[in-house]
Length: 114
Image 1 (cartoon, rainbow, N blue to C red):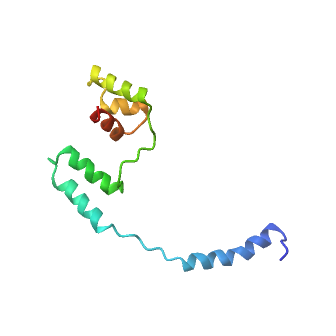
Image 2 (tube, rainbow, N blue to C red):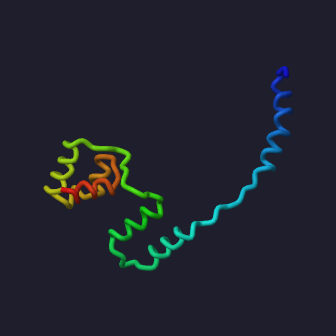
Image 3 (cartoon, helix red, strand yellow):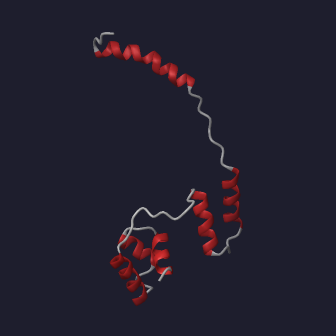
C-alpha cells in the first residue's frame, strides 16, 4: 500500500474508525453492592467513631493495605513527632501533612507509633 496525500489516508481510515466505535458498546457500570453498603453505613451514623469512619472510607477507596507513596527518613519522622509534642494546636496533623507534603493518614500513623 502506498501512502498518498494526507487527505487520502484520512478518507481510508474514517470508515475503519466508525466501524470500531460501532462495535464498542458503552454500558454504564453499576455501583458495587459492597460499596453501596459502605456508603449507607457512612451516612447512617453521624456519631460513628473516627477510626471506624476512616477504615470504611479506605475500604470504599479500594485501599487494602497501608502502602504510602512517599517514605520519610528517620530525621523527618523525629521532627514531626517533636513539632507535634511542642505545640499540638499549631502543629496539627493537617498542618504537618501540608508542610511535609504527605497524607493526613501518614502523619496520623507516625504520631500514633511514637
